[in-house]
Length: 153
Image (cartoon, rainbow, N blue to C red; front, side, top):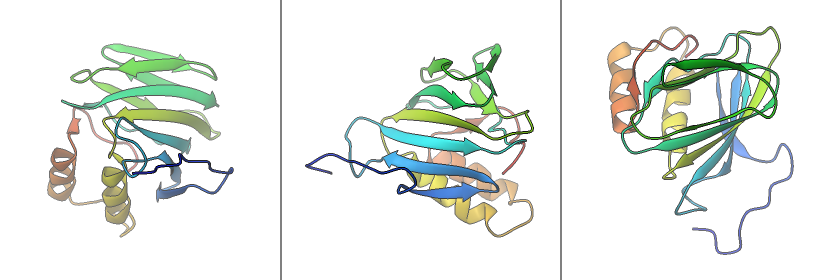
């Protein structure tokens, strides 16, 4: 746990790549007892697929570009300044159907969801489609219940 806080210059955050989508870890469980903060550089065509969490709540804030944000049954084409709060149990997703990248901040509480991204990045870095059973086990381990398929893993 960080005692002095965290200050990061642009481009200095640790993170992972998921086949063209970059996730920078701005605040992690190593820093906070309350939340993790991520900046996603969302590649065209990337979509998380609808999923929900039983314990995690998330807040999404679009910084640049346009994304389709799903929160429950609503899907909104969202541009800069749009936000969504998703409590546990609510299906949600975000995807980039545009031809240009987008940027989004994601706050996840409780902290620690970066461990899921680390393991997912390792799986997809092997090339080819990931084994569905392995992905299902990973999701279950990190409180992610997939409702629809990922478009880009």
